[in-house]
Length: 393
Image 1: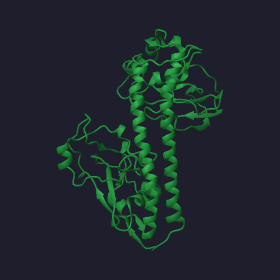
Image 2 (image 1 turned 90 degrees about the horizontal axis):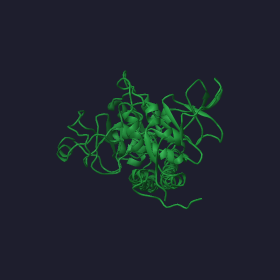
Image 3 (image 1 turned 90 degrees about the vertical axis):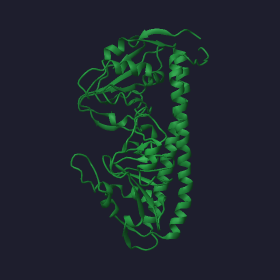
């Protein structure tokens, strides 16, 4: 295998390549909100009139150049446009594009994800607090080490295979969630059985909270994470533990909280992104001040409770009383009326949901394993500590 060469980015790739879009012409926009931290896929796009912004094509890598988006890992590989189509997005993007036979597009994405690039980009940031930006010329002229084109393709192939499997599992979970939602809607909304009498939600649940105070906590990881709103998945019921930034020790966990979460309790956000729900799958986690847990009792199950809350999420968002940021009062949430469901139908529903949720949980565990493997391999492959054998073309 050949030796890696030292060169600056400008020699091996195009940075912010020039593209043309006429003002007012319709084109696909990929906003900063469509980039997820350390996630390869673009989450969405919208057809809008072009009125300015960074331009790009399929095969380009988008890097957020502003704080805190860069530090949070907002970097994505563009593959949602048609071939030859030009899209646009935030002016706060840096765009990387391959140079033929010098760099490989997917390798550039993983290079941008690596600490070798990120540490240089973050160190170059200037500007006022909270609005710092990467100095593109500093990054552009920095000397990095790169493998030859064929080894770049081989490295990208290894890492892409892992990301493809991760993406497949995410898509499977979306399908499973849709199945659960459709089953709930069909059995309890479109063709309801049982009493049509209503009782407030508080008659069906117990509440788990954290006493309304912030416990003594740490930023250093412990076995007792604090679940905050940001860790509640926007899609699906799983809690994203990779986003957790606060922890407590064992003594605080055992003494501070009046109740602890139990497996399959439903976790609900009450401040900020209200109307977001997740299902707790077990462990020693506790909840933050802006989150509560709900545990089903009498006549319903946690599976039914989760789907009921999800179905009524728009109604729950309308309970907002916040002036500075959205917030809901727990008594208002607990006062929402719930029709008494058919007990036999709940049991049958649970039997279906147990299978669906177990598949979701298995996929979530597999995703965590694959992400850890990818994140372990990435710096080793990008530094040359681990080399990939490849056939020369």
